[in-house]
Length: 261
Image (tube, rainbow, N blue to C red):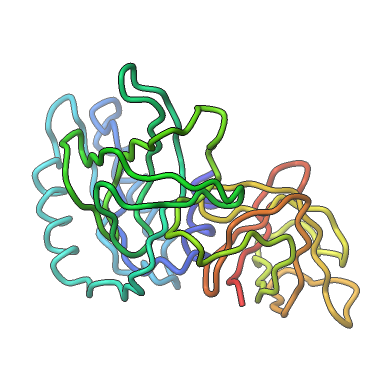
């Protein structure tokens, strides 16, 4: 599973990371060193070859302060992400708060949002407005790119929004059922991907069944890249340069990923 997660991180274009060995108090020091060595070997010849590897324990406090300092150091050196000012927040959780109504949570992908702003739920196109905003359990008047945000939606029932939806600035996007993209098959993929093969398509927090059409080719072998057409079994929200992951229909194994064109 760790190897699969590393493959997914690479496919998503993530450039920075800290690798943490948790619960290190439960095993002997020699075992922790072996795990650390295995992690470093796993990271060889990847973007994360020189990334920090640290052992921690929340029970004893080991490594926690060092991890905190490393996070601050890393964050201070990472340039701010380019923001196109169009608000988008993929929904990862939906729940009801008594006296307030429906609340969604997610990470702001781009833009900013203020209390009272109009928003649209994609792909359904339902329009609503922001009643209240919270980040890290504190009420705020505004959230922007990178924030974890809980958004209380006015007049929305619990069954009108779900994980996989995306909250967006109104009247700018249409749901899509066909996506053109650039796809790379992992070297570790157990099989080739055949044209018209049914797969699981993951983008943001959504998972949809789809078929991959490979123009002028019958299949893509492990390590291959190509321009493809993705035909979804139901509409979703997707935009130019969004990253996606594909997995086998069954068994559920990550086989590749790419970028929306």
